[in-house]
Length: 317
Image (tube, rainbow, N blue to C red):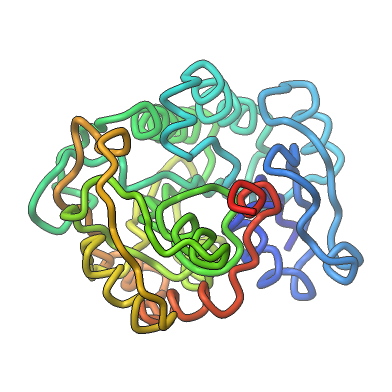
């Protein structure tokens, strides 16, 4: 199979590329906005690589016409919430317009898999189920992903594409490129800082190991018989939510570090979800995927081999 992977130099994308290369022909399309190329020379020998921004319609059309993929896995996005809120035009341009550029250029008969997010759901105290949970994002990122979902369904039906929407929940493990909560804490601890500034400690989130997330996306590329013009929507998470306070407790044990928490009011969100967790039964039933790593595994791997991007580590040197 010929697989075009957008955002393949990113956090989850790099893991997906390494799963697929060697078995399939993989072409990564990435703008390298997160920094330097993070794939090894051995990785690069097994893939095609195109540096391009998905907001550039001509570049996207040229890349897809040249590679002629059987499957497009679209992971490229602006997803760090503070950046999304500070620069909504960039977020919409990338997450919505970029997605439309790919859908318009997608070859007939090609499967299109779109990385969405649990952020599309309305805050709730129950597990979020694809068919019944209310869709009501609370931030720019969630809004942009929900818009993307609508266009995937619309263009899929209009052009007769088989499409899959994968709502990914919080990813953790080695290789992060953005200063999300857990890699930021680890970066500070590795730099010798034991007093950590945090916002709210009570919200519970569903954390999935980056390797499980990669396997989840890979499973949707080939499994299930999806009729042309139809869209399947699945959650990708563990169904096991944890609070920030619980995670800090686990990280204390894993790292052996004394961690003092200081609440930073500037980090407290005016509106914060109390609970976000995936009902993952549908992706298991349709694509045979299930999580194989626990949160303890993810935290241990993150601590022992952070592999964080240079610009994230530089902030704490």
